[in-house]
Image 1 (cartoon, rainbow, N blue to C red):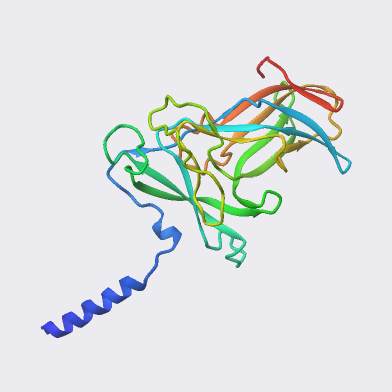
Image 2 (cartoon, rainbow, N blue to C red):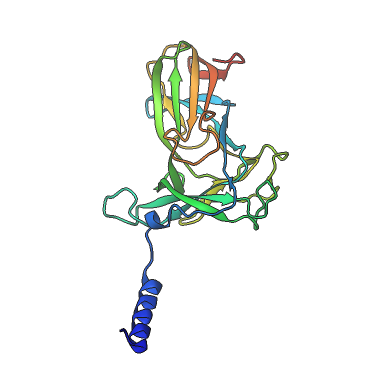
Length: 260
């Protein structure tokens, strides 16, 4: 029979071990709660601006890309300092963990400061972009130039984004707040898009282009896809693609009204 003193010693050892053990991101991911999940829904809108620039002898089609969060909860991703890409260096990237909020107060919509995280998932990596001077969530978008019958001509893949609230687009959505929830992309700072807000990358952003050298003048279909590998947890993955008809005419480009 174990003595009471021995039981106390065992309990103290276990208590100390539990206090010093810090779980990895993989262990933390998968947190579950009982409140209904309030997931984001990332919806890209048609490209609103295109322009052609000649840079270092290369002809490039610069484009705008806007993604709205039309879901019931925020898109929120937290960077964690770990070796995400497996190269042995824990300083050049960050593991990306998405937070899913639950309807803690039972209101049926996201309530900032009240509803709490009920689930987390590892969804990719962050990397520092020296051209932008901040951290990007990898592979947030993908752009392709197609013929009008759908044949792919050129692509710009794995475009990273600093996810933030750039533009208020739908204040009528339940869970919308007029206050920006995500305003920057510092190291180890939360990134995301609030309900009813959009993140906008314009034609002035470095790297926001498709190479089009050798493409003849004509009318084409510009395809933008958000979350191309379906890493982010959303309410709907089927609405992540947007198509815009454009005209290329020499060193000029313009949006055409007809769909493609």
